[in-house]
Amino acid sequence: MNLSHLFDSSLIGRREKVALEFQGREFTFGDIEARSNRLAHALTARGVCTGDRLCVYLVNCVEMIDLYLACVKLGVIFVPINILYREREMAHILNDAEPCALITDAELAVSVPIWTPEALSAEAATMPDTRPAVVLGGDTPAGIIYTSGTTGTSKGAVLTHNNFAANAVNLLACWEIRDSDRFLLALPLFHVHGLGNGLHCWLASGCRMRLLERFEHQTAASVFLDFRPTLFFGVPTVYVRLLGLDPAAAKEIGGFMRLFVSGSAPLPAQVFDDFHALYGHRILERYGMSETIMNISNPYWGERRAGTIGFPLPGISAKLLSPTFEPVPQGETGEVYLKGPNIFAGYWRRPEATSDAFVDGWFRTGDLGTLSEDGYFTLCGRKSDLIISGGFNIYPREIEEFLQEHPAVAEAAVVARQDTMRGEVPVAYIALSETIELTELEALCREKLASFKVPREFFVVEKLPRNAMGKLQKNLLGQ
Image (cartoon, rainbow, N blue to C red; front, side, top):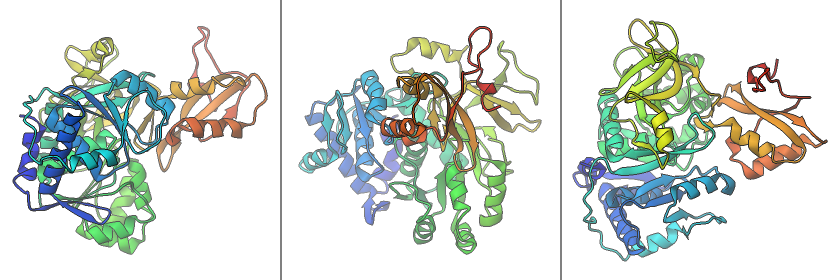
C-alpha cells in the first residue's frame, strides 16, 4: 500500500463530508480529491515524472495541500522549504535536491524554473478529475525533509510512503484521533510536524480541519472559540502564548478541547503545570525528528508526566547507549538509538552520512536521555550544539560562517541562550578585526538569514576561548 490507499477512507469514503476550512472557504474530501487529481495531470503535462523532486516554498494554503497530494499520487518527491529561508539558504537545498521546479509565489533569483501556484491552478482547472494511473509501493520516497541534524551541512532526510503511513496509523491509534474530531492546525506545512503529523492525521482520520496560515496569539482566543476544536498540535512557544489568554476564555476552550499535543522542542515543566491550571488539560508531550517523524509519546490514557516524553510508540524500539555503544544503567544518561518502521530511508545522495547515522541497524539520534524505573524516557540535552528555537533547528556554524564573511569579523561563535518563549535563541560572540557597529551586523543577518537564526544579542570579545589544541570552548562563553 501507499499513502493514497491510506487516505482513500477519507478522499473516497467520506467524499461528501466537509474536510477543510481555510480563510472562510470550505472544501469536502471529494473537492480535495478532485483538485489534487487535476493538479497531478497538470504536473504530468509539464513533464513531471515519478521520482522527480518538486520544491515548494509557500505559506500554508489549500494549494500546498493540493500539491502534496498530487505528488503522493504521482510518486513525485515533495520537498518543502522553510518559508523563512532566504535565497542564500535555499540555494543549497535547490542544488542538492535538483528539483524539476520550485513552486512559489515569491519573486526569487534562483537557478531552477519557478512555477506559480496560480498558473498551475489555472492549468489544472482544464484537466480531468480522475486519479492518475501510477502504481507505487510503500518504499517509494514521498518527501525529502531538509534538516541540520547534528552536522553543519543541511541534509535531506528521505521519508517513504511507509514511513509516513506507519506514523499516521500510530498516532490515530495512540491519540484516539477520529473522524468526529475538529482539528485546528496552525503549524507550518513545510515542517515535518505540520506535514507528517498534522496533514496525515487529518487525511487518515477523516476529521474536519481548519488550517491557519500561521499561529497568531492576538487572534488565538477568537479562533479557538469560533471553530471549537477538539484537537490541537503546537510547539512550546505556542503554549507559552496561550497562557496569556483571558482565564475565562481559557476555561471555555478547555471545556470543548479533547487533546493538546506539544513537540519539536522540550516543553518546560512549568508551562505544563501552568497550562493545566489554566485550561484544565495536561499537554501530551512527544518526541520526534525530521528523520523519524514520531518516536516516543506520553500516553493518552495514563500519566502525562511533566518533563518526560513517555514511551516508544508501537513497533518502535528505543535504547540508550554510551559512547562505546554499551547499554547505560537505568537512570544514567545515554544517547537515544531508535529502530522501527518510521525511520527514514537515508540522507539524499549522502551514503556516508547515512552509514554514519546507523549502528547495527539502529538510528543514532544525537539526543541524550534517561529512562525511569517505570519506563518513561526523558531528554536531557544533545551531543551537538544544535539550537532548537521555537521548534526550528539552528546550526551555529552556518551563522558563524556568515558573520565571518564580513571583513570586520575575525572570529564568531554562536551559542544557545535559554528563552522563556522559544526555548532557546542564538546569541553571537565576535572578535573584531576593525571597528563596526553591531547594529550593522544585525541588519545584515536580518537581510540574509531566516528571522529565527538572527542572533538576539551580539557580544564583542577580545578573543574566543580555545584549548591547547585550538578547539573552541563554547562552554566558557558568557562566564
